[in-house]
Length: 147
Image (cartoon, rainbow, N blue to C red; front, top):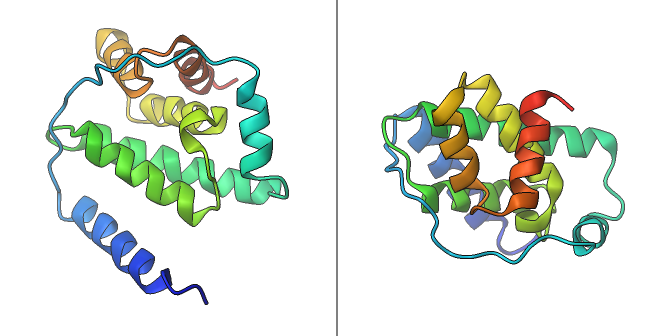
């Protein structure tokens, strides 16, 4: 057992409890400029999880979908807390570079769809959650469209 396992379990429990208890998030936009995504995306996905099974990938995406739905349905949205939650899910699933992993953003798109977002609300979340990164917004759109 890894020495950080109790901490990870405690942090996971706190995140789950805060979502169940109706933890509020405050919406903010991410105003940093991200570099465009190039060929490094496929490399980072391979490097972050060379031996992941399809079952593990589906579990990761399902967790991101459910977490995104909870985030959207919370009374207010705090992007920093959302990112911390994504990082925790990725760490638990052995994903090292989740910020550049297309599966993360495809799952976010699925979550936005499942949460019932449409129109300007959807576009606003898509832009903010992707950090205005065009490639990430495309991945969110793929997930939203079910592709």
